[in-house]
Length: 484
Image (tube, rainbow, N blue to C red; front, side):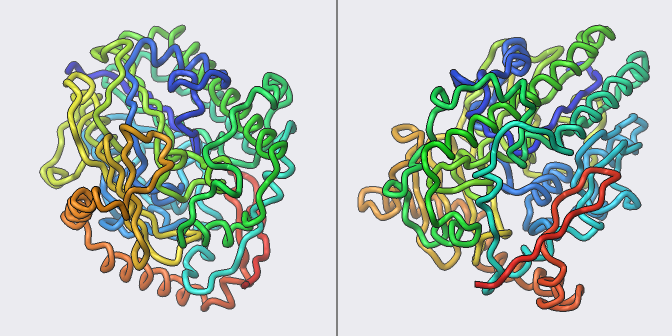
C-alpha cells in the first residue's frame, strides 16, 4: 500500500446506531454518510473499554487495559508505554494532535510532535472517586437527562475551536513531502445534553425511535446492571417524554459533530488532499441512551461497546461494508501502515491488525476483546464478540450470552439455556486464553486502592468530589457525592 498522509477523526461517545450510514433513518449525518459511501464501513467495530480514559490509552498503545494498567478515569495515559505517535515521530513523521486527548498532562511525552489545545484529565489527576469500588459513593445522574435540550456549552465551543485549528493545520501542512498524521479529536457528542438550537430544531421528539427495553418492566435483571442503575441514580425510570427529548438532543449533537467534520472535509478537499491522504473516523465508545434503563457508556451492550468506524482515501474500497469484527487496538498497526512507517520488533505481539488489510479481505470470523474496571462496578467485566456470539463475563456474577445473528438487539440472555452450555463453556475458554478474569480484577482493585492512598485515603478522595473534564483554559468544576 502506497504511503499517504493520515487524517484521524475521533469523537467521544458517538453511538454506532446514531449515524445514517449505520441504518438510522432519523439522525442527520450527511458528511459521515458521504465519507462511508466513498470508503469502507466496519459493521462490527468495538471499543476495548467503554469509558474515555482507559479506552484512549488502549487505542494509543495498541494494548489491552490489563496490559497497561489504565483501569479507570483516575489512571490516564502518562507516556510510559510507547504509542503509535511515538513510533511515527521516531521515524521522522510529523504526528500532531488537536483537541481532546484525556491523557494525564501536557508535560508528559505522549509521543506527538505537538499537541495543540489539548484536553487532559482534571488537574492531571482525573476521577479518583472511580477507584472506590467497595461501598462507593452514589452519583446523581438524572438532572442532565431531565434538562436535555437546546442551548450553549463549553464543549460545543471547544469543538468549533478544534475545527478551526484543524483547518489551519491542514493548510500549513498540505504541501509537506513526508507523510504526516493528524489526530483531530472532538469532545462531542459526549454530554452535557445541550445542543445548538438550530440543530435541535431539526428533530421532532415524536420521530425519535425509543431505545431497546427502555420501560422498567422490560429492564434485564442482572446484579451488575441493577448496581449500575443504583450507582448513577437511574433506579426510577424516566418517562417517555424525557427519553425522547434526551435522544433528540443527542441526535442534534451528533448532527453538530457531523457538521464540524463536514467543515474539515471541505477544507481538506479544497487543499487537494483527497488523492494523497487517507481518513479514519471513529469514536472511543457509544452510549446507552436509556436502553435497558441505563445511560452513559459503561456496559458491554452494543449501544455502549459498539463503534462507528469508517475508512476512506486511496486504496480503500468504496461503498464496502466489512463484517469482520475489529476493535480500537487495530488502530495502532493501521496508522503505522498508512504513512509508510516500519513496525518495530517491540510491537510484534500487539493484538491488533491493519484495518487497511482487513478492508481488502473477504469477511472472516475474528474474536475481539473488551474489559471494564471503572465507575459503577463492584467487580470486573469482560466481553468477547466474534460477530455471531457475544459473551459477557462478570467476576463473581452470572455471565450473559447473546446470539447476535438471531437476536441483534441482545434481548435474550442464553447463558442459562441448557442447549447453549457448550457455547458458553467455549467462550469462557477463549476468554481465559486472553486474560485471567479474577486475577486481573484483584490487580485492578489493588492498584485503585493504592491510588486512593496516594491521595490521602477515601475521606480525602470523597472531599475532593467528582470533577468534570474541563476544556483547556477553564477550571474543572467539582461536585460532592455521598455514600449510600
